[in-house]
Structures are given as structure tokens and as C-alpha cells.
Image (cartoon, rainbow, N blue to C red; front, side, top):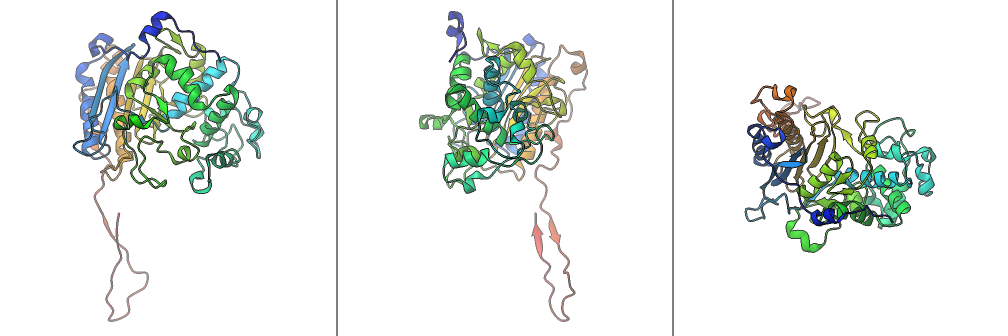
Length: 432
């Protein structure tokens, strides 16, 4: 296996976080950027998450790096630290691990966008599957359904993988864009088959270790649990998810999966984001080629690139003001990463919003918080006239709070038949 060439000067800096600079040093307004604190605090106060780690960077430097709240709702829980608190990244795994691994193998000619999956995984069988390519899986156009509840049917990781590989396609490959967890799982298996090593080993040796991402793991050891933000308390597996992947499909097949399973800190992700902004290189180490980064982060269908979501659609928390070439991803546990190559900007938010949320609709709240943080970061850019001209201060979603915690309504259902004469009517009360 060929590892990236690392110079002596690069080795001396591996593991060093990005340097922190005042916002003004990179053309940003400190006054506007300070609004991030209020946005994150609003989400915590509403009960969506007990804590958060946020890192925002521009032009090769970090301009905002801060931890908020605690790992849990307990008053004696550890405070969140963006440098040391580890979060379950959930679906960020798809982009940070799988898409990057495919880029590396693409550069080596071992797994191209046109590679047919059956040529690598002959056990991927069924109608139309001979047409499915790497490009289809990365852009969610393979025809696979969104998921499969293997945790209810598989008795072992091998059986779960077999069920995933033999899942029927819903449509012809290359047509409908339908977000699927199964595609990245199958890509992870293809990466293993082509490289000859497990997916976690490939990502550790070819991505995380060369970049110095020292706190990014699959299957983190138990010794790290005090630093790991717990996720769900009562998942289907029958015990709390803490230090093990929250996603039930990934958990069922062993915890190392293409759709979820990666754990990391906000500062480690900042290194990764800067590598992407640098078109594949960081600290003197080249992970992928410049042209490959460009190709994989360009929209190919609807709002999808090869492994990422386009930020131009304003979905998944990318806000309204990031550039048209922005790409990123979000994770179900409350994580997100957005990268704006035109403004040399990245925005990272990590939370554990699935941990005993005190809000009735934490998913809506975290979506609004992501949206607002992205907008604040973009509008803090002072050296782009169109952004500087946007009126400030402005109402944000956390100020409007639509649908966050709707008031309880008592619905009185009318009886379908008239009550018998002399009988008391007892309308059913439905509280939602």
C-alpha cells in the first residue's frame, strides 16, 4: 500500500490544530461572528442539546473555536471542549471517510467513478444491479431504498451485510435521486475488497494519521468514554449508546460501516475541512489530487455531488448566504460540516441532540441552529461587498422559533354516532 509522502517539516506539525486568528485578520467582522454564541445558546436553552462544539475557519485559520454546555444534562457533567470532546459523527462518516477513501482509490485507478460495483462485489446481486456504479452510490442514484432494518432480522454482522447486498433496487440506476444509507455501506465493502484492509484501517492509515487527526476513530476504546458525548439512552439494542455508534444498522454489522460509525472532535474535523479547502493537501501532506477534489465536490444531480450535498439548496443547515459551490453534510446525531471554497470558509457544529432532548422537536431546532450559524459565519465576511451590504442586525431563525415547541392542543373528536338518549357523551381527548 502506498502511503502519502510526508516531509520532515510536515511530520513536525502533524496533529497541530489550525492556528487561531482574530476575525479581522482574515477579513471577518468579530461583532457579527459573536452572534454564534447567542444562536448556540438558544438551542441549548430550548432543550435541543446539552452542549455543542463549534469551529469556524477562513483562509487557513480558525476564527471561532468554542465549546458550549456539557456532555449531558447533568450539572456535574464535563464541559464541552472542541479540542477534546468526541462526538458520534453519524452520516458525516459518508463524506469524511467513504467519499475521501474513494477519491484516494480513484487517484490510484483502483476504484473509479465508472467502476461497476458487481465487478468488485459479485455478491451484489439482483435486478439492474449489474448497472450500478461507484458514481451512482456516491450520488444516491443507485435505485437502492433509503435503508433496511437489519437490526430486526440479522443474527450476525455477516448476515446483516448479506441482507444489505441482496436488497432489491426500487428503480433503475442513474434515474431517481433517493438518499440511501445502503449505498455508502456497500461502498465501504468495495473499499475493503479493493484495498485488502478493513475500512477503519484504510481511513486511519490513509486519511486520519497522515493529516494528524489524532482523535478520529471507528470503535473508540473504552478509555475515551469520559471524553465522548453519549447519544441515545434507550436505543433498540437494549442499552445506552455511549462510545458505540448510534446508528442501528452500523451497530448491527459491527460498528465499522460506510454510513455511520466515525467519532471525532471539532478541531480534528477542522483539519479535514482545511485539507478539502486546500484541494487535497494539508501540512505538506497530499491526500488526494486537486482535480479529484474539484470533480467529487461538483454537483452532478439535483443537490448531490459525489459524496456530499450541495449547499446551494439551503438544506440541512447550509443557510442562505454561503457561496453557490458550497458542499457539506449533516449527521442525524446533531453534527454538520459545511465548506465554502469560494470564500475559503468552513463551519463545523457538533452536538448530541439525540441524548435525552428536553425539547419536543429537537430535530427542527438543530436544523434552525445550523442554518443560523452558517448565515452568521457568511455574513461576518467583511471583504465581500454583497455580504457586507446585508442589513445587520437581523432576525434569525432562533429568534422566530417557528414550530420549535408548539403548544399542546386538545382536540375534541365528535362522536361518529349520536349518543343514546339519556346516555352521557364522553368525547375522546387527543393531546399532541
